[in-house]
Image 1: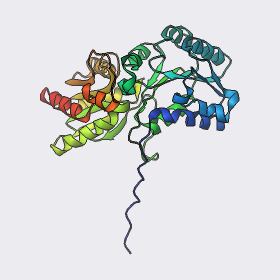
Image 2 (image 1 turned 120 degrees about the horizontal axis):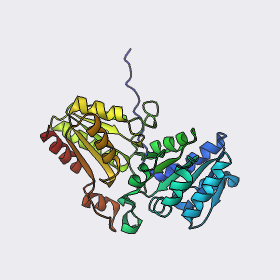
Image 3 (image 1 turned 120 degrees about the vertical axis):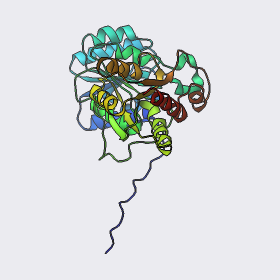
Image 4 (image 1 turned 180 degrees about the vertical axis):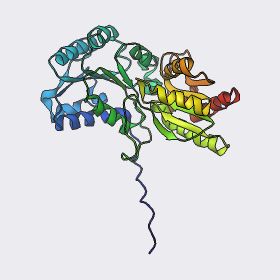
Amino acid sequence: MTSSSPAAIPVPPPAAAREAYGPALVKLADAGHDIVALDADLSASTGGNKLAASHPDRWFTVGAAEQNMISIAAGLASTGKTVYAASFAVFMPGHCFDQIRVQIAQQRMNVKLIASHGGISVGEDGASAQAIEDLALMTSLPGMNVVVPSDAVEADWAIRRAAEDNEPWYIRLGRPKLPIIHLDESISRFELGHAERIREGDDLTLIACGLMVEPTIRAADALADEGVGARVLNMASIKPLDEEAVIQAAQQTGAIVCAEEHNVIGGLGSAVARTLAAHCPVPMEQVGIEDRFGQSGPWTALLQEYGLTAESVAVAAKRALARK
């Protein structure tokens, strides 16, 4: 009798991380979580209107008024509700940072800020709509959890995980449809403060978040073809950062590359660099947006223009290796 090989896991079509938000809210409400959700005139894009369709008493739209939305969210949270508030990343925190700082972060309110359309992959909407500094703003706030999921599956996990505690969260979601990385839920699941090891390797470590995780995996595959073993960490949890995983990677592989769809100042790379400087300095390179604002164009062309590609990660890896 011959044994059959394991059935291949079907590969789902690409999906945008933002598409996970609405269905995740419905799952939470259906499961009995005492949630309410707010939107700032963008519910068709954020997906919050899906909760409105199934649980209309739990969803409220405030119009184009993000500052007011944050005040309402804080008020609802003060009554014991778990509050989700959604807008585009350029508007939240862009239009309401002071309200987030004073009313949510300082008071440690149970509010989950869901920022859709993060980064330059917003595309044709141009620089005024492309948030490239939001992670720097949000990680600067004491007590704020900051998360950047790598795909729609991880976004679903993170959004629902956020309902399990009473802390403030900032979850950044993207606009474009991306390949699904997490095909088997039994293997890996999002954990706040923990890195996900996607590839093994001993020569250096590639650390990425959000949209840059999939091209970083491809960069590791290309490096493997050249005989370089690259460990890959998906660091969806920017804050709290998995410092133990970073230190272990530095000690075991001796070089680090960070990749993110964000300004190289104040995001994932900065958090990793602080950890390395304090505990285990090793050669480090960054792949991100280098002191530039975005511009209008197809999102795939913008990633090429700003060097947010698998090829750029591989080149940065070789620079880091040369410095070991």
